[in-house]
Amino acid sequence: MLDWSQCPKVEGSPDKVSGAWVFRGSRVPVRSLFENLEAGATVEEFLKWFPGVERGQVEAVLECARRSLAEAPGR
Image 1 (tube, rainbow, N blue to C red):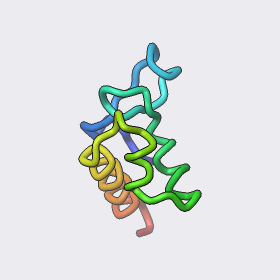
Image 2: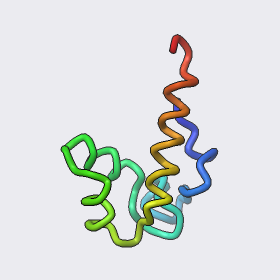
Image 3: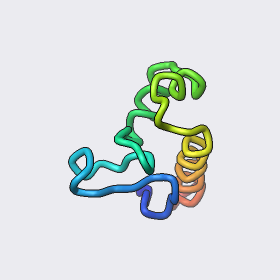
């Protein structure tokens, strides 16, 4: 399971977006990145639609997810 607390570009707080993990300094949930990518959006489109999110944040989130998958048992 992915431990978002290890990704410095995101934050989770019970006072912000019901405790969902969000891109640090924004109210944009991390899950919105994956939902948009799964729906066929590009990173460029996501950044355009969510101007409060920076490219470096998206890259860090994707890297955290990639590392988590690479370290998953049975991989």
